[in-house]
Image 1 (cartoon, rainbow, N blue to C red):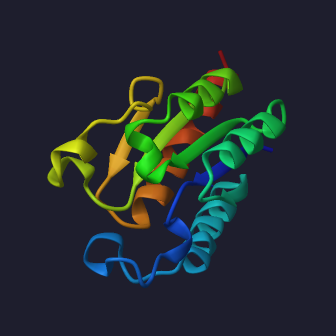
Image 2 (cartoon, rainbow, N blue to C red; image 1 turned 60 degrees about the vertical axis):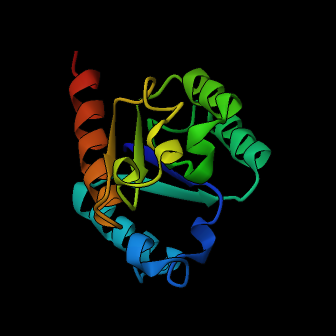
Length: 149
């Protein structure tokens, strides 16, 4: 069975009360439940991890090597500067899709650059929790197609 790691970086743990006009009103638990429902409908396993600490995210990625088939990640503010997170994603040697709840390209200039974007298969931003479920569907398709090659 396909196994996808859904990673969330800093401040995603306070969804539902953090700037709801950008990030929406759903909590992380509510969002994870919707992602799990989508995963069930696709016949894939999902594993969730969130941390406000860069090193913990990197450690979790490294601990997951060989146990996952893909990563859906919202790096939060780490998007804009974490080369060590980028290196861990590269070293995982699985497809990666970057997601964001809000549209980072319609916000402050500094938010528009992602150090992860060039190693990700793609980026989905601006669709709230649906960014995650869309990414899940896409990454499952990529893994299925590539496993049949």
